Image 1 (cartoon, protein in one colour):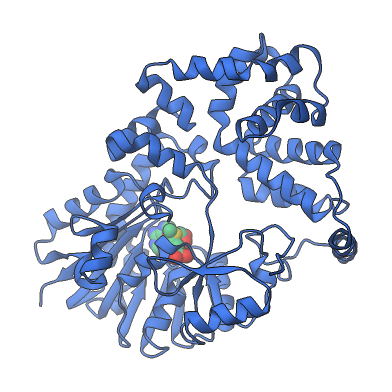
Image 2 (image 1 turned 90 degrees about the vertical axis):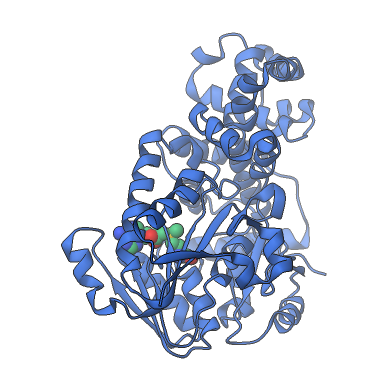
Length: 477
Ligand SMILES: C[S@@+](CC[C@H](N)C(=O)[O-])C[C@H]1O[C@@H](n2cnc3c(N)ncnc32)[C@H](O)[C@@H]1O
């Protein structure tokens, strides 16, 4: 089966305001030429672009996907295989940044004092070797000589030094986590923490959710196969498909026709907990609508689905996606983030909703496969802010649940304090809410695979999904 040769991209290319038509044409021409005769990477150009993108993330604090987008848009002369190499190498280094820095500080005397770009060349090279590429090839590609080339040869020794550290010192470095997060991951996963982080430091699969308003998963499989896309049903979500990771999903006809959305399997499972009836349902932190569209399909496009968020841009994106997906039952509303005006904005829905989903803003510690750089930005203070906001949002949005209705709380964090602890805190103040085990919703077989106690608890090393938490809370009648 033909494998599409563009790298997966989070952005929909056609809707973007950036690409100059000239760049588009020349890139298409390059790609067509490349498809006719694949050629070796022009390593100097790949290295230059990788350095630029990496510097934006590491030294200027830009988000990785934006930094890559920004850099690659200015590199229309790169072939698609080269663009893909830039992306893959930068992401690979971000996943192992702390490990790489440790290894180089042992393998290269005076590494810390080197000029920043020279350090970054070494970092990119060491990361490639760590990911299995031959040392000699990498040294040549990176034009490294003398002490720098010798440093690459000395990496195995440095790795042995890392291996010989006591477990608690080794883990943060080997997992490439800040110390405080390493402690949190150890608290969460105990003896499994190493395994959990190994899986968290892998690339995530590209996962589609079939839009059940327009057809089932089998029909989507056929359509994708007809477009030359390798795909495979996901094992946990009945509406998911894994796609070949090198597909640019957004350029497919099936995507343009609204037959699927890109959505992690874990996120699909969280959406499944809602089991939205065709009555009145609220998606209180709807964002760009990943789960809103799934809920609309559960409701068979009937009833009223209220999608709320504080972010106008995301709500606009949601509207666009809803149009493509053929969703008609959604009403969007931009609401204030806090204070009396936030309470007023939802007053009309007080005690009215059969289901309220609070897919809360969180640390994102479950999504490091896709956003490896996020770990280096998170501080203990940020985490405390997330927890305080999660408690406040659950409190505010619970007022919309009608007697007998359900409040579904979810995050893409794996940390207990953002998950079980938030739910416990809520229940301690709201004895009229009780926990409904997720097995009651998903069935005993699937429920057992994806739950811890009564809650949804997903992690890459156990489920192959991003890390997710979900709880169903029922308001007494
Ligand atoms: C985890 S994201 C939601 C993702 C979305 N449900 C999806 O499936 O694509 C959390 C969302 O909460 C929104 N948010 C942050 N503070 C909020 C508040 N006070 N009220 C409502 N939404 C808020 C953010 O703008 C963000 O879009």
